Amino acid sequence: MPYFATYKNVLLAALLLCLSLPLLAKHTPEVRCGVATGFPPYQFSIDGETTGFDADVARLIFQRLGKAFQFRQESWDLVFNELRFGDIEVIAGMEVNDLRTKFFDFTRPYYYRYDVIFILEDNQQIAKLEDLHNKFVSGDRHSYIETHWKELGTLYNFRIIATPSKEKSMALLKAGKIQAAIMPKAVGLYLARQMGIGVTILDNPDPGSPVAFAVKKGNSELLSQIESTLHALIEEGEVERLYQKWFPHSSTKGKPDSR
Image (spheres, rainbow, N blue to C red):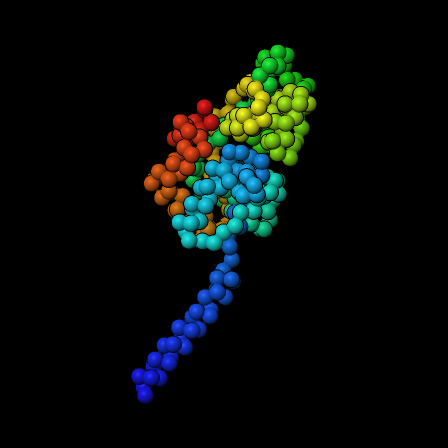
């Protein structure tokens, strides 16, 4: 009789555990990871699926952590503000600068981006930076180039306009509605190939901006988890392997956009 009672108790405990597991899973919060739209080959979508180098690294990190997660993919300004005001927990692939460190904590960098100024290849009227004075240029807010121009006091020599995406900037350049576009080198080259247009780089002053994962300031637990996992993936060569997938013949250890 005691054996039978014990057996019943074991069965009852097992049954209760099976019933509770779906409820636990249901109430386990997913990590919401922000990524931008229209930022290929780093962050973009194909047929509605989030893809790109930063997205691949994020997937690998959360798989290694065993954490449920979902991508929140929107325009960069929306993603930025959702992290700042608490609607998401982390952003993949954010460039680190002094302004952003006031609001966010960052992991170690896992690669660098380089902002450049693109013009159309057949534009005979623009040969040097001064030729863009009083011309329309699509901007890239918080980029090294615009920050550098502010420091030099030359920013207002250019007619900077904002666009909702890098694709829009490249489309405007193709249509001749702007004379230059500021964006990361790899992004511009990728979009130019996709749109079938010839571009050239007018100026490339950027020494490189470190790129990392960002969490809201003070979220030390999540930051520590992502940081330790990212460190392991870098040491194992997994981040470099993913980089080679998107940027053949380049390396995270050199100038990533130097192709």
